Length: 93
Image (cartoon, rainbow, N blue to C red; front, top):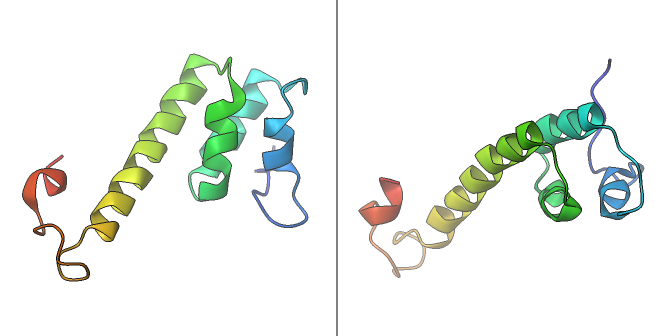
């Protein structure tokens, strides 16, 4: 089965995920979750979908957490903003 394309102007995946009445199989949700790792704009629709299979939830947590962690470090890099020391408690998490 080919991978679904994610989050382009022509792609309805985020809108489909936001449609709570859309019936999406567990296998399809998992495939979307795998592809979504590279598409941050799909994170919230997946997280907010509700009733996710455990395997999909674990997959989403693995990259959403990493993505938010990277963003935290980027937004608080002392070389850029002077607001945090590089490293510190966040770099070792």
